[in-house]
Image (cartoon, rainbow, N blue to C red; front, side):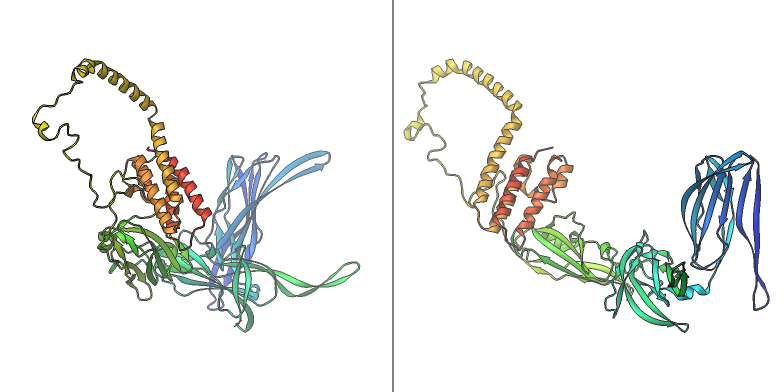
Length: 610
């Protein structure tokens, strides 16, 4: 397809007042018109104007004109220093009748909004426009942005307290909006506050400011500190929004420039109509753009990095508390781990208790899937451990390593030791069920004369005589055959109903256990009895040890094919609820205890082997 192309080109030159040197000669392409052969649509790209002020917005329109409605798509490339937004699509049909001859045309227009973020000369490269599957090239388009006097009525200033922070080191980022005239409407955008993959942003309320005001920033109300300032002899009212930024990656990081569009009052104007004359504020739409801020983010040093360092940056303190300090061997102890500090708490990892030699030697660390929670200025984790022997006298100090950017050194915070009193656990038989423990030291009784001794005294020297022996010899074969047939029949019946009999037996033991538990009045004894009943019931159904029935072990049992997936989540939730209630400082009410017993009956009844 052959096309005729018409270009409108303007040359812009400027002479430097110092030295009389020509510093610029740029062809500014204001309009590009592509005229194809007759019968095909025309494509025209036009800039609203070619010289704009910094922060000013202009329109870029792409108009496709043809005799029929067409589908138009365009891809305008982004240019550094410009913000290009859009497009918005509109269509208009036109009918013309000249000397009885009718012509119709359809105009499809794509409109883009372009904002100059800094002064300079810009060129939008040629880009494709697709019209009903046919691609046309339009462009390039040029424009120049200058700093005008208009922007002095409003200004934007961006500051940071550190331009070369370490990874995860907090950086204070402030955006100050300076206003000289009265503002009637505005749109303030601070792209940094939206965060991203390379940084985490926390908004900082203006605490301690003598005067504050709520601003709409990025469409969300945020508090700003209000003050006064004089710049270049002009008095301004300042509105400062503050955020804390945590860079997540090493290398160069550019913080996008903020921008504000506002309707600023510039004096008054008189509006007259047929009946009245009215004095109104004269409003001028102005745009101010702040500066981009470039950070050089440093990686954490390798030298001196302690083993087990989890990447925490800042200044921290570690405190660990135990739910109970008087326990038996194997009893669970709920530890609450609190890490208080000034860094990025959401990135703080829980201390690895198993890596502490004394903890690994004296305690079984059950582990948890709890990711922790941020509470104020501290990160809270919870971990469950069980003492292995009665010789344990304390829970040892635990280290937490972090990098302190103020001293540029690695430091380690230690928790305080927790004194414990651990008593031996009572002996437990391998086949023992709930409530059927034997007393320590008890032995089976012995029968005098041996087990079922047939004779005593002198009769031991003579052979024993049985008058029923002949009859037994005669009936032995028929009886053996009958026993064999009956055994096989019972075995077939039990094979068909094995699951039913096992379920009935388990349910009978469960109901007895729940009935016994319901009569316990003391809270501690009640929850301990419920936990023990659940452990023995699940162990009996799955053929495992009761010590393996913990919330931490449930996913492992499912993965190993011991526990069926159906009902596993409910069982894990029941065990966690029992542990929380057992170690809760608040007393339980009868309704909550009854609900827990009812839930235990329902959940334990559904436990099956995989």
